[in-house]
Length: 202
Image (cartoon, rainbow, N blue to C red; front, side, top):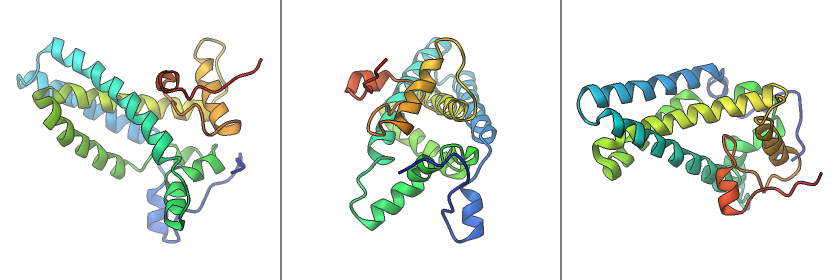
């Protein structure tokens, strides 16, 4: 799909649903950072976890998020579009972003959808981690907020003249050169591990 630097896709005929698909990036980032801090505070002050456990499991959650980000981007957002339903879903989830990568209000899922995902993560990871869930899910939500921040700035601003420039290069390769590589946005970690680092020529 050829990227268009201007404009925005129309996803729904219903104006209310269409409006729900747009959000200023500051809103979801603020929501998830607040929830992450609140979970750590609640878990520590109610003695579900101590400070060292909170720190350790926070970083475990952040690492888990980077893997979830990679897997979702690679296998869900870039799913095979071999049926009309899959093609429609892929376009709603991600295809519209590849067509209009400069559409700043479509760089995050609507907060309502994201909160539903966050709630599901809490109950799933509570089964796995027990009371350590307060640290793990705080790390996941922090990771998601960082992903949204990185994704926004690499589309909205020119790259800096420092080592962070590699994030801009990595994501630009995914958008404009090889959409089947460079799936990591906030970090190329899993691209290195799982063999989807793009081949770059000088």
